[in-house]
Amino acid sequence: MNTPFWLDEPTPSVDAGSQDEVDVVIIGAGITGVACALALARGGLRVRVHDARGIAEGASGRNGGFALHGGAARYDVARETYGAEAAKELWRRTEGALDRLETVAGDAFRRTGSLRLAADDEERDEIRREYEALREDGFAAEWRDQLAHLRPQFRGAIFHATDGSLQPGRFVRGLAEQAAAEGVAFREHHRIPSLDELDAEQVVIATDGSGRGLLPELDDAIWPARGQVIASEPLREWLFDCPHYARHGFDYWQQLADGRIVLGGFRDFSILTEMTDDETTTEPIQEALDAFLVELLGYMPEVTHRWAGIFGLTQDLLPLVGRVPDHEGIWIAAGYSGHGNVLGFMCGELVASALLGEGDDLLELFSPARLLVSG
Ligand SMILES: Cc1cc2nc3c(=O)[nH]c(=O)nc-3n(C[C@H](O)[C@H](O)[C@H](O)COP(=O)(O)OP(=O)(O)OC[C@H]3O[C@@H](n4cnc5c(N)ncnc54)[C@H](O)[C@@H]3O)c2cc1C
Image (cartoon, rainbow, N blue to C red; front, side, top):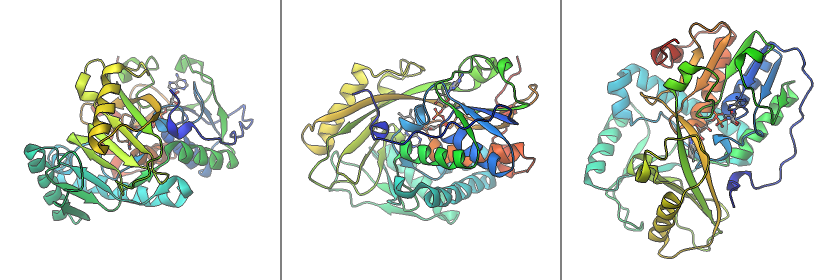
């Protein structure tokens, strides 16, 4: 029951490889670490990825399976906070990352679009502002008012045609197989207790919200948050063509191709207890998920999977990507604020290109120095 639905399918094990001497060690075999490893190997470096668990067993195999463009903030807010050009560039680049993801994900990705719903009038005004900002900058957002087919009632929505639905566990494991084929070594079930123990000149921290204890200043900048999810038995009726989310992303659900519903969220019902890296499900949140499932469907189906996962939140909802100041040879890509399927894929590649000496405008926006107070 506690196994995430995404990890509950047989997968061939990834070849561990045998690189004793490496140029780069990566901590974390989720989407970030694996995408980074693949890019570094293709750049000619010898790479070893360590994970305390198995490949994709962190947030990358425990999420809602939404593959969304953009950042975690609303686009209109992002323009105000990060600057109009920076926000536009970030949104544009994530669209490119989604296109690349589609080419490597095989049957783990479906280009369905996604629907951002307003639960009340206030949220409608907010997402309307987002819609207008997106249209102004040339993005393909569509406004939807005809939502009477949905329960409960929603007050409006933005349809994003570029987004999709991801089987994240299958996607990351598939990418890890490609990385292994390019010579990347994997050490699964091997926790790195301290950065001092590592034998490579360069180290990439790719632990999103679960890397507590590696560097004190990172612990202050990236806060662990728990998300809880349920999956139902396959339903006979077809209700949702694409991933749906409402209440600023606090509730999210989708219907998979086999008919089952994957539903997560309600973290805000107990926001303080959910600021934790304890990966267990809790009764209040699970009950809220069950109640919402009944609201969505009008009845309670059998729930086959219940799980929790940990992601990393940052103060400005942007990840930290690049060199860690005051620590020679230490790099980071983490802190996607619950929006890491596409961003993690993109930022794993981005930190790899930084390590290979290539510049990129996004590295300034994501600079770790902006949030790190050195210890
Ligand atoms: C419930 C939930 C729902 C979400 N829904 C979505 C969604 O629908 N769409 C979306 O875009 N994003 C979503 N996210 C966020 C997304 O899952 C993450 O941002 C993304 O998976 C992060 O990938 P990662 O590779 O950076 O980190 P992870 O996948 O968390 O991988 C980090 C790995 O580091 C390992 N590790 C940590 N410390 C050590 C150590 N000391 N030594 C060795 N290994 C270590 C961990 O074992 C872990 O496997 C969700 C997250 C959760 C938890």
